Length: 135
Image 1 (tube, helix red, strand yellow):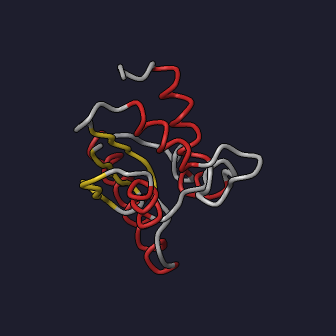
Image 2 (image 1 turned 60 degrees about the vertical axis):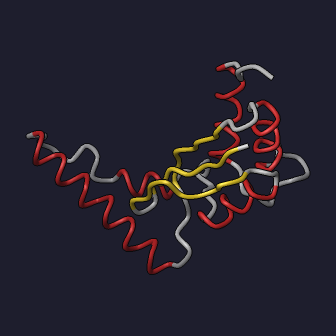
């Protein structure tokens, strides 16, 4: 199979970003996205997803969100950005009903369940992660 058209990747990324793994009746399930991606990859092709994840505990979520807040503060200072325009970004992220992240374990399991090999998390900083696998 050839490359996946960019329009299809945009649609798949939308579903990967906005659905829980357990949505199967009326919404397009995330595992279908992974199956579609898997089906379109060449043998030995790699899938890489950069996304946010749900922390596995409330304690970790609190810590991860503090890491994010500290990172924003450091960058604002480093870049000389004044003002409080983005001080509520974490709350806006949490309040946005379109944000439905799954845990990293759930994401990795979903990849494995459709046949991906060498599934792993390649980078993680708090809620931000990069993970994938190979066909």
